[in-house]
Image (cartoon, one colour):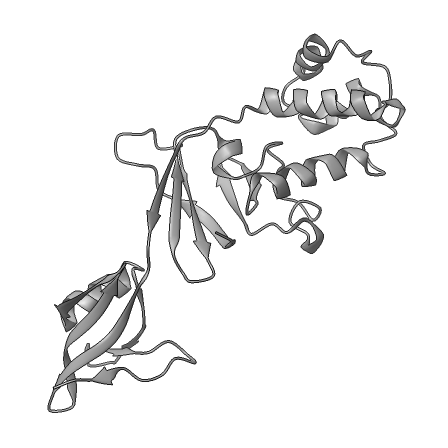
Length: 229
């Protein structure tokens, strides 16, 4: 499954207010909700990179960002993309000339003990520069960062977005909709279809009139609903 967009979602019932969920959307509009676990896992961001011109750039393939407190974090479509964003940043011109101590201070200035955790895990000299590390040492280094940032898997819930395949009309006005759900189809009232659309569960365009009436229309580029008797 390829995710093309992500956004922050509300916490699950019973979870702390700050424990946000992340909503991922695929090319068909289906929704996957990640909850629990750690922020790194929920955001597919193993380095917990904050949202920035670099982490959100086209080259890094970010698909969204989420806010936690005063900070915003990039969201990536999968672990591999988020991991590559971390590695490329550490190998780049900003970080590579720095010593490990300087790099960790820049990486997370709110955690002065970060370098101590890295040294404890890697046994590397904190005064060495990143660019002086061998490939093997560099791998040990980034793995230590990801360990400190904590990648703990939580829960995923998949919610398929449904389609209207046919409609019943009375005097030219839709009264019922045939909705394709998974491999099954179900007739629902227009009012139920409108609510599903409001909840983001239905591929449809809602047209609101000043009179308060709501009309269902196919999404742009889709063929008209098939009328059945």
